Length: 369
Image (cartoon, rainbow, N blue to C red):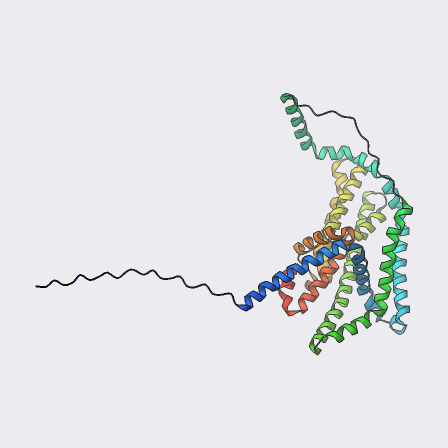
């Protein structure tokens, strides 16, 4: 009988992995847009750092103009010519700042003169607070003696701080101040004309209306924010002055005004104020508990102001994430120093308003809340 031919086994075929989905044109466009925005943000930050002496007066003047422009639309200023109204507002702002500076200049100069004596009187109490670190230092020195190592000797060099040249420093300070004053006056007088011309450049009527609404909301909300924060900071300054007066700290009016001014810079300003009050307390009181009482009392008052009073006045719509504020302050403090810390939060408020009105930026507005 014929044998059946052996059947050939079919080779096993491994399933091929699914082909990767090719990148679509939309994905490529989104990646290019992200890269472009990264380059634009980096270029803007580099330009702000490189041309800070030119850009910072413009930013400060724009901030003051946004703050004062709603007042020009109210009686009796709205019945006056724009130039006269702007001049009156600028003079009122300069007069209030100048009067405050003159009133506080004498006690401030006295405390600046007493800084070395304050540090010398506070040093023994500070030494008690860092006794643990002193013990560690003595242990390290004993270990060095046991191992035979010696610190290299040398002559003591006393470095005298450079004496400021007021004649040379005056033009560097006076120039930017005059630029801010002149630009603020110009923005108040010609700002509406520039806005109308800017609206004419928008292609559609909807975009023109959106731009006008954003600018008006920035003006009204920024003015409301700054006036509310100024009022709560003034209340904090009054409470701080009364507390220090009750504790017997000299010049409570000076420290109350300084507390109100530093409170305009969130987080960083109150921490700096607490440090200053701690040094003042260490120089004025004998015991460590009494010395730390002014700083502790201020921190309690600041906590009530920042967590209860300010949110109650502003509401939830103007609240910003504290982490966003810290990062924003770090960026602009690094770029522009103290002036950057002063204008950082108003710029962040403007950014939040724009992000909340532009649909493509809504997610950034949610991150800032």
